[in-house]
Amino acid sequence: MDFFLERIDGLSSEDLTTEILSFFLDSPSYAPYQRLFYSLIFPNQDLRNTEERQYDITTQRVFEGAERPDLVIEGEEEIIFIENKFYASFSGGNQMYAYFSRLINNFKDKNKHLILLTIKDRKELYIKDIRSQFNQEASLLTSEELFEFCSNNEVKLKVITWEDIFKLFDTSDILIANLTEYIRNKYLTSTILKKEELAMLQNQDVPVLLNKLWAGIDKIKDILSSDGYSVTRTSQSRIFYAFRVERAWGMVWVTFDHYCWLNYNTPYVLQLRNEMLKESYQFADLEFRISKVGFIYDKTQGYYIFLIKITEADLAGSASEIIKEKLEQLDEMFETAKGQSRNLTDRGM
Image (cartoon, helix red, strand yellow):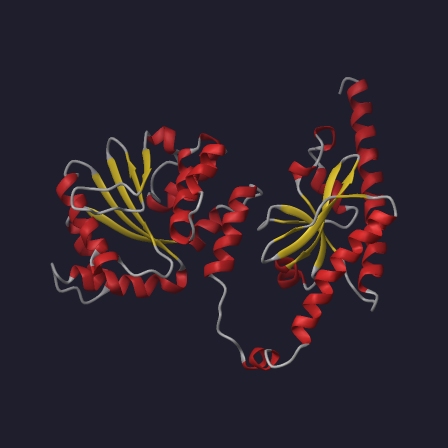
């Protein structure tokens, strides 16, 4: 993990997401996701991971003509150039055509693939731009002619979207979940304001409510601490404001969560992750057991949540009572499950 953090230190946007994707493709622990990713490039082949394909993965590899694809995947029989674009223009005005030429000139004996990785909303615009680059070589009037021209020159051109990857990488893995959240928030969220949203900018209702929600988390923390609960320091980012409560079985987040507000219509949730549980409380049937106390599993984020429904004016007071009740239920559930597990072990089952 330290090596991974060194790779992404100081990076942002396209470089950051490229390095994270490279890590997924290069790390043996992500072999199942590698097979899924390669299925987007080779839809008619058997599912194989990077090691099985004997691929080398490099980022920002510089060729003699100064071409520098974001990601190069090379094996004995294949060479794959991947260019990762969100909103940036193509370098030099002919970036994809330059990669196309480099593939033809340098890798005559290999199966050649040129991949544009982008987001769905930018796909057609980038294809149009690529067509203009290739018009130096041929008069390509349609997208179909562009792909056919590349294929006739033994280069498979393909456009893959991050949305395509997210559909395949539906997982509880924390790193993939955070990459998905980063890209969705930064690149997939529309910034076009509706008429009613423009009107909201002209009054104080939204900032006043946000201040109350943030202050509510601070007050909930104080209430729980005063009642003898062990709480941690508050953590925050652009999309959440939260602290953890420590219990005998592990920890649970108490959070003001933008994602949950957007998707579940409530800003406050309890959040529980598998890795936050002590080893003796990590049960195989956790999802079933925790559902009995009102938690649901969010596949997109990869964790369990309990929705704290606020119906009273006393925001912090009412939320604190709900949280304390839920913590008691969790304590009982985990101790019961541990006792049942111990009994099965004693019986040799």
